[in-house]
Each structure stands twice: as structure tokens, then as C-alpha cells.
Image (cartoon, rainbow, N blue to C red; front, side, top):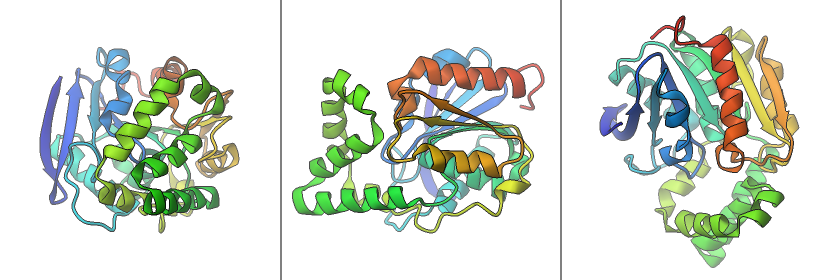
Length: 271
């Protein structure tokens, strides 16, 4: 494993790389960092060059003052891939990471060989907007921990919350301990996001995954992404909330693995 800082699009980004082979980029969601994908290297690094990273304002990456935007995040990652010598890759994106992946594919389709899009949208949805507003209201009225609790209720399924109280407690503490200004800037990044016009022109293989218990990105919102991309596969996972790699990692990574075996196998994928 190699973890290092690179300069891309004028800022410092933290990336971690595992294995070798066709590039496979994982993009995390709002408020997370590359550790969300802790299960990915063990599943894929024997066959792929697994690239994990922290998006602008997250984790160990630089957090310049906002506002942020999905288009800016996508430009960061396009520049990061160029810095890493990647000319073509498969992208796995969750939530805001899926938005970034779609933006990259629309802006630079030749860079994207395939995509797995999980719990994401093609524009800022009303439910997401309302949840972000509630988080901000709670943060300002009662502090970061109150905002983190609102986030937890939206992104984890009821079953997972009931079965994993210690995990939920750690999540609230860690989310509340993050620098709040970059988090708030990232929360507003989706305000102008809308790739609906660009998705019908995509021609790479795409798999879209939704969780049946996802409150933040409900099934119809996620399905709208698949409906707009020609030939995209769509699957709803029963009982799954928004943070799929945390709630059901085996199920999630099995779905990714099956997609890669069919559409981005090491023997034929472009490195």
C-alpha cells in the first residue's frame, strides 16, 4: 500500500493505492474519507490497481474555503487521475461520490471505462436538500453532534442502527469532531448539480445500486439515474440503507465484483 499526497487542480489530495492492474477508483460520500472503502483492497487489489482517496475538504486532503461544487470535485479527480498516470479507469462511487463519478463521465467520457453508482442521484433531490437543511439547523442550534445524529438517522437503516449502537456512537463522535466548515461546504456542493442532460449520451457499462431502506437517496431517486443511462443495470438490495459498504459489505462488494467480472475484467480492461 502506498499512501501519499498529490497536487491536483491546485490543491493537495490524499490518495492510497493498492495492487496493480487496471485502475479501479473508489469515491466516498459526503463527510467520509477513503477509509469507507476499507474492504475494497482485500477484494480487488490482487487483480486491480485500487485507488482510494479523500475528496477536497475531507479526510487528509486539503480543505480550502468553500463554496464547493460537484463539478469542482470532479475536476479535482480528473486532475488527480492525470497526476497518477491513469488514462482510463472504472469508478465506483457512493452517494456524493456517485455524483462526482457521473460528472466525470459526462465531462470526460473517454476517461471512464465503466461505473458502479450506489445510492446516488443525477440531480439534487428534494429529500436530500431537506435533510441537509435539517442537519445545518441542528448544527447551528445545538452543535456538531446534533447534526451528526440527524445524518445517522438518514444514512443508516433502522435495522443497522438497532443492531450496531456502538458503531453509531462512534460515527456521531467522529463526524462531530471533523472540521465543520469544510463539511458544511461539501453539504452545499450538490445545490447546482444536475447531469440529466448528459447521462443519455454515456456509452460505458454502468451498474446502479439502491438500498430499499435508504432515506437519503430513496429508490426512485436512484432508479432515475439508471433510467437515463442507456443499458444501465439496476438493482435494489433489500434491507440496505445508504452507507452500503458499512452495512452490508459482502453483498455490496459481491455486486461490484460481478459487474467487474463481466464488464471490466483484468484480462481485457485498459490500464
